[in-house]
Image (tube, rainbow, N blue to C red):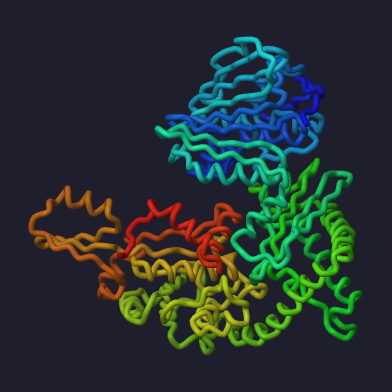
Length: 635
């Protein structure tokens, strides 16, 4: 339902100006890369979401126009246009040109608001070549235009209307951004996430850059229940009905949805005011504590575990869980500029008590559900005890000792992790070339025999019985899973070096799945890299060239001609001698490395589950959907 209330110029509070935005854009949007470019869209959409959270908007439309122009349109109240009482300028102009000016800062315009950095649409204005705003309110259509943050027109009336809302169109400034080509899938995923987190709101994205426009529309009346259902659609739930509970408290609202599957990892995604708090925080810690206590209490009360048995651990109880924790707060507090960890102290106790009360009732009223969850945890506990024994075998005695390192590891001389790097290499042949070609001072080589276990389909005790994984854990020296400590990692660059063919890609994916599930800090800290070996060697006369993709090959052949050349395609690293491997792939002066990063934990989790999980249908659909994007497929 759309509510009516006053929303006037008096509610716009001013904190500071825009002086530094164009000079240091990274301080306000994170970076000037594609991530920062898409952040501009999110900032504008967040304004519309704030209207929706306050109950005044139920439809948001995002358009990607030709020339990568973005338009965001909503049916909210419309930005106020009357004179600001302090600045004596139209409130619209204040919102668009003054940093931290908006209804969310006084606590009167909005009770709850998000915004990834809270910098507002003024930063979008400052970092755009041009912006045009159209406001429908009070029976009129108002507009104002800006160039690089500076008003170029006055706020003027251009028509009459019975509608209301705001439309903001902008073109990102190519003097600021490295790239200005928006990724439809990136924007669509974020909008879909927002639709899950704000049930009942219709959010659509329309891409008009091609002859045939592409449109996605999202509306989830089930909210986060639909979110959990979507995540578990690629797995096999062990109970049909999704657990859901919610409650209001003095400073906000919390809702939680839970469903267990038959897998071995937990997937808990947390949000605060629509911000993905992938580092967790007080809402996550409150939930974990209460979940562990509540399930143990239920199990003992109902004699599923005996009085003299030890309690189930939190890890046992969370095995196979998919949960969404969604809190909306009047005054959210976050740790750090990136706002990825919730810091509000009161939220821990609130989530703990609400979970204890609501979940206890649900389990008591659904004894079969309670039994399923407890028995799943009991099986996990048995596997945990077996894994504990196996894990002890992988622990390194000291950070400086090499007596417990795997025999196949060719370690480097340096004991300084900051300057040390390890190459994880496919096969003995490539491993031999890498060992001979490396710089022994700072480069270690760990050859793997064949493909490692797919950890997506195995419990930790089985994973730790795999010789290749045990060698990898021992070589890195930092433990695994809950015992993992990134401060103990022996190498601050971990480089996956596999063949440029299907098998090499599969091995790389298996390794990335392992790191993501059991050593995720390595990815989040930017420690994992992918080596880029050449695909071709071209010889012409006395000249030799190494080429890394088909595009480079075409360009080179256009430059040197096709006559009297010798072209070799490398199907494996073992085809290169040690000197070639060093020169092309291992020499820090010449090599190219790709850093593995997680831009969105939900998307990353979905892809790993789809590609590496048990269900064939989602994997087949993924391959069919992305078949045209494949490059360098080894046939």
